[in-house]
Length: 383
Image (tube, rainbow, N blue to C red):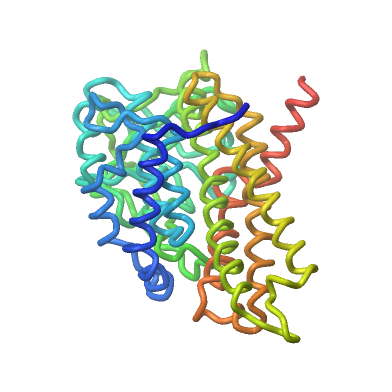
């Protein structure tokens, strides 16, 4: 399948590229150095409507597809992954709410998500339930006109600043996906404690947190999907939305790889060694050609997977293939591009050192490479 961008998509992409290069690029090192959330960038993203790109117009969003949304995210990721992650995250949890929650909850919350008035984290991972998301033990027990939530979450991105947490919890004691549902927990809920996890390797502008729930009361009207022992629909419904955006990790990795590639290319055109430009040395030219091949392969896979979602034909296996190929490729490409700069690339004065730390996260979050390979193998050898 050949994916040719429409004039509108080209315009959207080019506008994001201009914004990234003129506004975000020179600030990227600051978020990493200070472990600071890109607050001013988020404000601008809200004004431009980037936090509601993939959300239905009925709720104040742009109603665009995932291809359009990730064209924007890819361009931002080329220069600043921390800011790209804001657009990604705030098009994921609100998208789950917009797709799965009761209408009253959608109408009340979606406009506030899109405007930036409210932020929502995804609280899924637990100390003993990472890639195996169905193994969660956090519980939501019926109590009067609501539920009591007990348990622990870990690696919750923006958990220290989110106004709401989309919490995956077990409504019934059934094993596996059965019984798992989701509900929204407000940050000021009594019994909720948040602890920021220190010493993050990369993407330091996005904090990771532990959440502790001790009889946290949640009203019944804040349930997004209810888990039932008779059906895994509650869990599967949100998982389908989440899987669709899993490719986003691949697109962000693609963006980082492209950003590193462009830095290396420009440097090779001016840097001379042994009387010639690096760009004229066959061995290095072949390295760049190999990287370009891998970048183009990742682009094709990622946007094929996103286009399938937009067409209503989501392919979980293709999404896993795209995520693995793009994130693993990006690690190697950034490493090779850093090599082009010699000793200079090893220091933080250049973006390559930060980009190498940043991109490492994308092979882990959203389902590790090994988990994706298991899913791919299950497609090859169906049970």
